[in-house]
Amino acid sequence: MREIASGLLYSKDHEWVRIDGTECVIGISDHAQNSLGDIVFVELPALDDEIDAGDEFGTIESVKAVSSLVMPMSGKVIEINEALDDEPEMVNDDCYGAGWIIRIETANMEEQAALLSPEQYEAFLAEEEPE
Image (tube, rainbow, N blue to C red; front, side, top):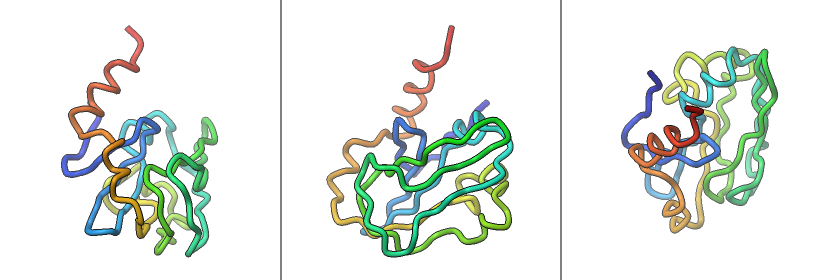
């Protein structure tokens, strides 16, 4: 059974967002890391990069595939999870905790309205799954 953490917002691209004031921590969902399999590399943006919602902000590579990381909210990168350089498997082990990917300062809090609640994300995943 996949884990969908409460207190987060989710994108249909399977990123999660934890909002704290105007700062947002972003990672990938348990569903995403599980679908990817063993993660071997995470390409991260540079500090101070300004990235719009819907744009690619990096890639995540597993033994199965390379996937784009899609920005759920616009913002400026204020921190990257440098630990992922040496331990990309942290995304598999603790995707909602130590396996976070970037922290941004968002300029547009209204964009969170386009994201899904945990319940909406669960329903979205149920619709996506083959019968």
